[in-house]
Length: 358
Ligand SMILES: Cc1ncc(COP(=O)(O)O)c(C=O)c1O
Image (cartoon, rainbow, N blue to C red; front, top):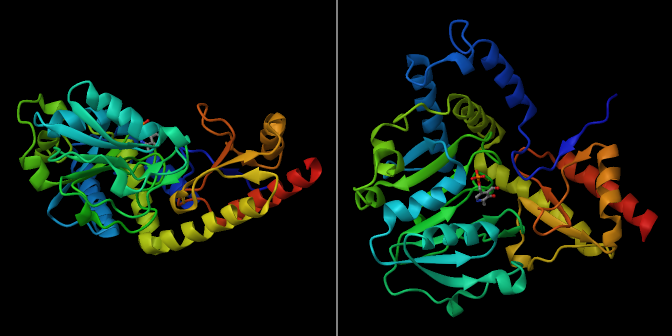
């Protein structure tokens, strides 16, 4: 029997096997013998699919009618630009910097608006978040921005942050990994390529009230309200990526929804963190309350063995364990589609490797 492989990539990341099979079917024949990559976003068949996928996501994440859901191109990085363009109103914007992604978002916003950094975890290499009572919060910011899961550092803020101003959250690497209290947020965005599908699609869940107060001077492509008015079909939609996400929404629903995902994700990450904490050969630098369920970085006691670790892992079918290029070390990304067997196999490999080299 061929050895099963596991892909620990941070994104684009693994897709459930049953979804890949359905993608094959759609590639062959989505509608009347035409492949999904040949149909128009304005065709009746795709519009029907688009509506169905939106209602699946609404059910999955319990999103009320007070919110619009947008299916756009541009990635999460594009939202770093569009968010200040749409919602800054000559006031100040509060950004909580807890890692590379929220830092990048604040850098983008500061090009066009007055940004206040509420707190910056760079002093502890993004391994902790200062207590909220020490944060430097503005009087009446236009919004408060944070990133729920910093993919590079494996730092996750597990509970929603409450603010008197609109709360905007980058959930690219945590969306659908657990239930979300949507009402606590005014805008949530996520690139699809981690928990919800493939690159090319960005999902934005935005409160209609926030849209009604947004900047109305923007060209339509940069204006969230214009995208909402056209049901995300202002221009050619990312048909194929949207299709894959629709299949992933169905898969999560079939698995038992985000509650079930949360249970499995907690179980998976506990298993790996417990092993790392017991080991004297591996360590994880992130403060325990902020450890990510999705991205688990770890370092080896002997840095000279990193290349050998990666090579040996690949030989047994464990791929993409190298840490982000800016931080080094290792990182196991264990999104919804990673089965617990992948974690068990990784731990068995790590244990064997440590015993050989301790
Ligand atoms: C938390 C987070 N935000 C933003 C991004 C940027 O996403 P994109 O490359 O889709 O623009 C990433 C990418 O990995 C991410 O993990």
